[in-house]
Length: 160
Image (cartoon, rainbow, N blue to C red; front, top):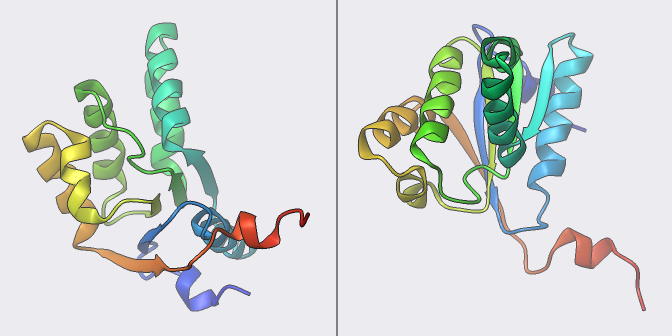
């Protein structure tokens, strides 16, 4: 069960960074926080970062970019899974800055990543954008590290 104090937010904001190796339960924990928030009648949106970036690129081409961005900006809790799994292009970094800036000090975001925060700067790419994005994330977030020898998928998967 997720501690409700973790899901409730002062001023409607509580950012979390969940780090750990692949399969250690980052997404599971983030979704548990999301379910706890739903039970408190907060709106929750979950998306893998690669899917978000693809959705924004398609929306830009279809002329509905602002509508799609609004959906990500207004959720009480936004869960960004697979955060910075791959390096970003400059336009993707600008899109993320737009989302992170609009949510900063207003709404909660959970970032699930396999990489330590020190490696994020390089993955974002362009220095000024990286500084702006990271400044809004790392100073106001709780850090959760999930450690484990083996993947949860390996431990709980089909036994031979």
